[in-house]
Image 1 (cartoon, one colour):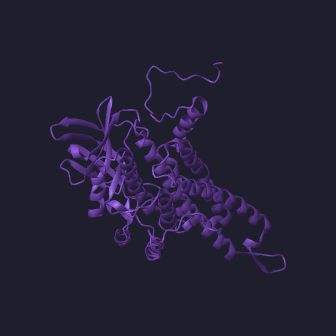
Image 2: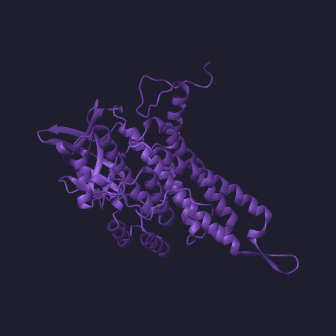
Length: 405
């Protein structure tokens, strides 16, 4: 493998923790996160990774976070994608505090003091992955808002102490807040089984008149808009950290495929054998696949390092972040598929590590904003310079056919 392009992570994710997770991942394919793995992450302060040191966190930059998530994606993909939802949500709160310098620092401090997990509860049925609108209703009362709705999938919600979520007071007004999971009227329903990322613990959060106290509302804005840039910042955190995770999954597949072809043999016409890795055509194909991986790895890691130079995330770089995730969506599943083909029929066995990687890598295509929406967003940006990620449809708008000139 080529020299790593990622930031050093030992200070945030000790080697002993990495090895514990790796061992657990290799023992069997889990359907939930092993308790010893959660304990190891908690003990090393991992869940405070993105929180500034002044509030008791580890003070990791977005580049550090991406490096850590990449390593987790390599050793235990399901844990990596589940915890990414927590990490990028903390990034969202941090970016909000940096922009407003309001009392949201108290939320960050409370999270570190209690070593809490925060579930990201923005995904909803029939929302199309839109961040700036919500089907969850918020009815204003004297001491806050009563929330009614359903959030799914919601990773780690069964373990979380808080859910960071959005809801609409009315068609024009959106709020974002931190809801304690011990709230009356809150329940967790077992989520559907997924083909890959089986241990991500992505369940459904059901809200039936839950009180979100006013003091835990950190942002209020017009539905469909992003006046402070906080949603753009959170999208950037997610695009980069999630891409890093799936690059870790691809790296895992690359390592296994490389080992496999170096150990497997084929017969020669003189009665001997040769290792498959000696075949020129296989070396060429492997090189093509590896070049694609290295290009994506360099792009994600170096872009994250560039963004980390500024204290406040530059949201004008959102198109690049979206394009970066889009390229990972398009290329990484093909990379892992090509590696499976190079290894042959053994990849089709359910117990084979490449089989798991094949299933896990596909999940990148389903995280909002999905490829279809990203193409639309970037198409608008290219043609008229606007960056509109409000996916709500205008009922008066008609589609223009390709024949209309």
